[in-house]
Image (cartoon, rainbow, N blue to C red; front, side, top):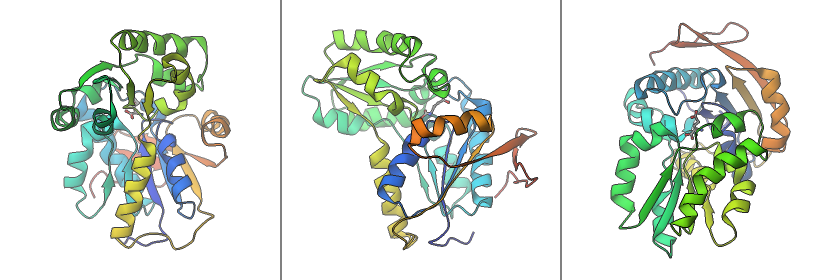
Length: 285
Ligand code: DGL
C-alpha cells in the first residue's frame, strides 16, 4: 500500500449513518478528500451475526483500499464491534479509526450517576462494549435500548415523523423515569435525530454525539503518519452505495447540507464489491 497525503480518507457504514461522521470530518478537515461506502443493500447490520458483519467489513475495506484510501474510518459502532480487531490484524499497514459508545465521557460527567445508551443489538453483544463498560462505567448505572426500527426510519429520511418519535419515546421515557441525565448515541445513524431526542429528553439531559471526537482522532492519526493533506479547503466527496443511488442522492442536502457524487457499487458473491464500471476488489489484501 502506498499512502499519500493527497489520497482520500476512506469511511464506511452499513448505510447513511456514517455520514454523521463524514460531516464532522469535513468540518474539521475541509481540505481532505473522502471516499464513502454505505452498504445500504445489507442495512441493518445491527441484528446480523457478528461473523457476517466481519466479512462485509473486510470486503468494504478492500474496496476502500482499491480506491486509494490512506486511512479507514469504521463509521459504524456495529461494524467496529464485530470487525475492528480482525481488520487491524488482516490489514496491518492500514490505520483504522473505530467507534465505541461514548460511555467514558458520559460516566465522567453524569451528576445523577445514570446514563442511557442507544445502540444496536450487535454493539451491545460485542466484546468491545463489555470492555468499555468494564473500564469506564465506574459504578455509573447504564440503561440500554436498541431502538428497534430506528435505523430503517432514518435511512428513509424520516427524521421527524410519527414513527421515529414513537421509537424514541419508547426508548427514552423509561430511562427518564430512572433519572438519567446523559444519553450516549452508540449508533452513527442517531445523530441525525438529535433535534427530536432533545425535544423528548428536555434541556437538562446531555446528548453525546461521538462524531466530533472521531474526526479529531482521524486528524491525530493522519498527523502522526504525516498524511495530512496540505490543502486547507476544497476536498472532494465521492460516495458509493450498494443500494439505491437516487434515493441516497436525494437525502444528501438534508443529511450533509451539501450534495456529492453518488456511485453504485455492487456485491459479487457476497465477498467482492464491484464498482458500477466493472472494477472488482478481492477479499484478501
Ligand atoms: N450505523 C450503524 C452503527 O453505528 C448501525 C446501523 C445498522 O444497524 O446497520 O452502529
